[in-house]
Image (cartoon, rainbow, N blue to C red; front, side, top):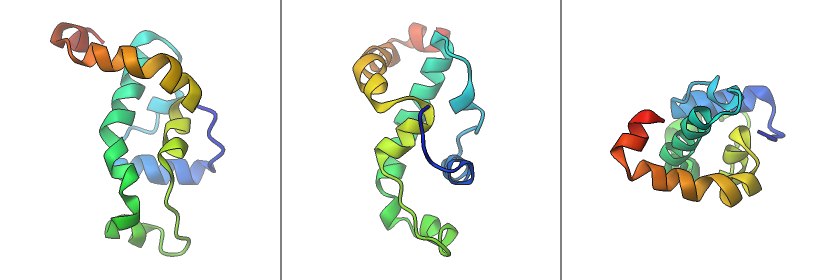
Length: 103
């Protein structure tokens, strides 16, 4: 993605969220886009609540940092592309077990 975050911040955030740090850098194809989308969807509630997360605050004690959801999404893909092209069709695919399994 077009993220401007330093690599160490990306690694810290992805590690804290339990996301494989290789996922944002996977080459583009439908399966990888879906993997990135699932990572975004599953971690978004946690990202939006980092300010209240004492464990996250302790990790960032030397330099308080609370990334916005847009910063997080940018690690994977540009926000405009995510909301304009990916989100709706990939959310729809999640509703169909066969499609979900295939992806």
